[in-house]
Image (cartoon, rainbow, N blue to C red; front, side, top):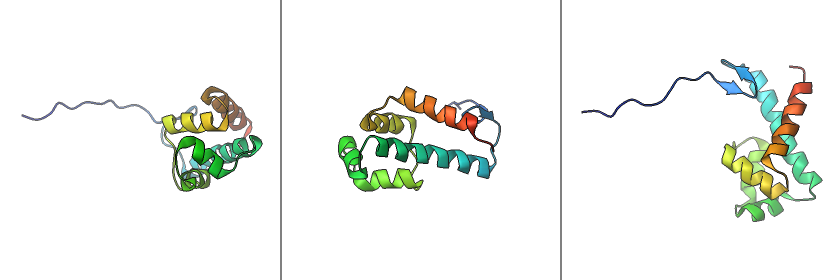
Length: 104
């Protein structure tokens, strides 16, 4: 007797896009996200080690997500936003506004 198959097939969604994404588009959007994270930290007057301390993580954690070496899941992004002094909602609104103004 095997386990029942669970799950569902959903289209890939990435900030309004559907279907498979071309790597260059994804890379551009990822770079915008990373730049906004860094800019938000700098505007808050925080160093990477300040954010890391607030998160209870090593400074390398912050360095790795800012450089794109490591990706954040949504819960980690929520925590990072809190450490930066912004709400996840406000951060995402700002990100979407930037993405809407970009030409791909």
